[in-house]
Image 1 (spheres, one colour):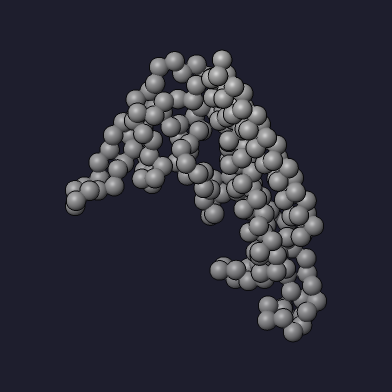
Image 2 (cartoon, one colour):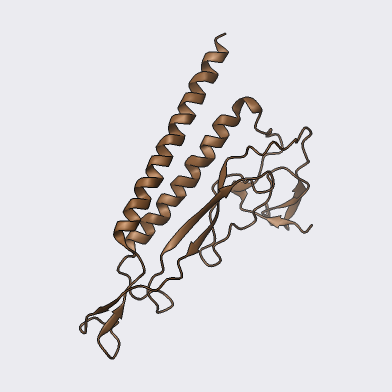
Length: 201
């Protein structure tokens, strides 16, 4: 498999251990917090561009939707999972521990170097990996046509094509994301309290 280039900030630490079963509840709820945070950021971007009738490509802004799916051992990542705006996919979605080589930026004028993260033993996959943002996709539906002859983007008939963003729908999605975020935060705090109590036994 060819080397995979990743930002230095996302390089795994060779000494870092896998998530132990004792802390799995923290990791699962943390993945939910991360996914809902990114979902809220996408919603905020939609709301900010609800009236953007001309983007960089000359067309109205298109609503973006976050697609969240169950994470697997092969799709876990270190750091923030930032989707590509152009393709809507997660770049370099690879397992944090495996036999893949990671490219390291050049130091003191040397060429790029690479090192291999070894496969850790005891990697029985129980399917409990939380969730991840699989993609940020564009909504293919068309936005409304509004009659506004004085608008700079009006066509020859005086109609303007607006983005396919409905503020009411975005606010409902935002409330849903907030509730799920709060639920994950509650689970995280409860698991943390139980682990702390277990250490006192």
